[in-house]
Length: 125
Image (cartoon, rainbow, N blue to C red; front, side, top):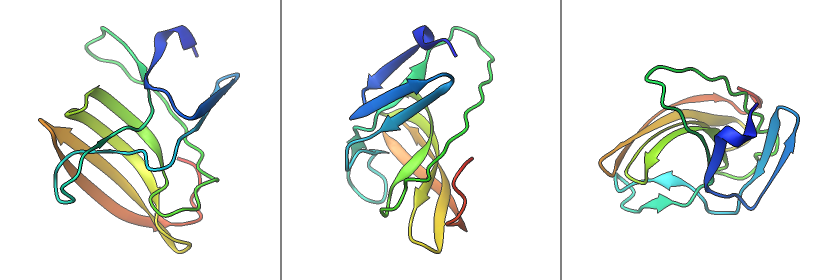
């Protein structure tokens, strides 16, 4: 992993690099969401971006969210252009029985959330 090709849009409360692993610790109440349904806007979650000029590219990310114990805790990936245009795929903790596997597409400042329930014991993706 070339850390020089990565940059923070917003830095987290803390992070640690261990070989090919980045452990990110966020502050409470951080999220990405715009306008739709809940009538609030959040654009304060840490985002570590990889810039590319390639028209087509791929990447592999493995998430580990064994520390998720509070409702709405999330772990995932973001493709971020700006606060009003981005895509997010994440697992969101709900309770001890299940969590949400979801995606959010935000276009021109309006978010659209698609979700399905998955077992709460799934801890890596």
